[in-house]
Length: 348
Image (cartoon, rainbow, N blue to C red; front, side):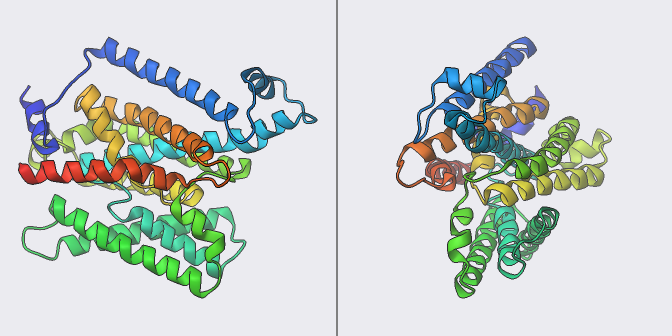
């Protein structure tokens, strides 16, 4: 009970848990069921309405001569799977980041990782057109790592070190700078039209080749995040408590940073800088399931996937003449939530 109270102190609010392990497993299984239903809706609805029977036939008995089957297999299924992987990646990256920093406002977008990866990719698209996917991946990692280093360095300049609020402010400044530079380069060199939609975030046009590149990295990073979940729970109690319990803090932090960079890097490389998913979803998981990261990480992966699948469905159906960027939809939810969270933190 003392451990739970310690973690509650940095979340800024009380803790609500659904119940014991069996109920938690039941809730997670229910979330998976809702995710599957959302996938079917995403495959069926769009500019062209495809019946559920045709969706099922396209998945189990593909007919290359059927237009509906081609729409499902070549267009909607890749973007739906990409939404699942990217949503899970961003949510888990945010959960791990909030756990190791004990900062409830930490997010790969707010901490500059998305902007750094996006700036690096803007340079690649501008100066190295047709670059191989593996180099896009490496450049996104490098950009995210450099941005994260800049954020922590700026936040640590004043006395008292990198506090939660300083990290958020430094992240906002670095994100604005790198985003402006990336857009400026794109406009100056005449490639703004090619990358502007990517800069707002979205999974439109994701191909099977990109998915084959995406899922091994995401799978490896999510598995590593699950293996680190107990250590992240200990880190969320504070360095003194976790060190007293025998945790190798530097080693765990290094592995956690690698996980965050992989998840944020590949997500930005495929879908662009989609913000606020990593901020909202971990808080929802903590509110529903408590403070144990062995539950928060898998539940965040499910909820993040569900959020992005529904956001992608909304992006295609809100205005069918012009697809709405997913990043704009997540921002509509994320900005009020961030303001509410900042107000709660200031009241503590």
